[in-house]
Amino acid sequence: MPEETLTLWVYERQEPLLRSTKEMEPRYSRLQTVLKRLTIRSICALPLTTARRKLGAITFGSKQLDTYSPREVGFVSQVAGYIALAFDDASNFAALRRASEELQSNNDRLQLLLDVTKSGCLQFGAPRSAPCHLAGRPTRDAVRLRRLIAPGGGRQAATLRG
Image 1 (cartoon, rainbow, N blue to C red):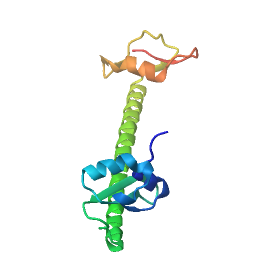
Image 2: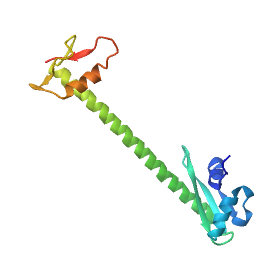
Image 3: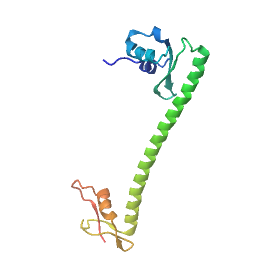
Image 4: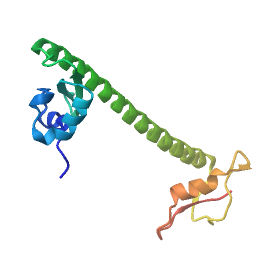
């Protein structure tokens, strides 16, 4: 079983955690060793949470013993809230960008289908090998359009003709 970490504890319980390195439980012995080597004597771990979801935790360390007052914890908790909002906004922006790219791809395929339909290239029952001409020229999109419209599957599919 993996060792429980302070950040995992804070993440799961959504509560701040203040500790001096001397007061740490034995289950955090690896962390305690690292903190002692860095001469960190106090830590403050806070949840990174928005109204919609838990994102993680952030931990601050100090070389002074018992350095975090309730007032300072309140201030740093507000900062953690702003950090969580920034992460959430970045995540939402990335999701919006992915959705926008997918929508653009779908729109491009639909525009191709509309262009071919308007030009009269689309006809049911025409030979599959018949070329398609848009504005008097053979189009490279004919093969793509055949795949888009008629993926196969044994049913009568729309084919293209000139």
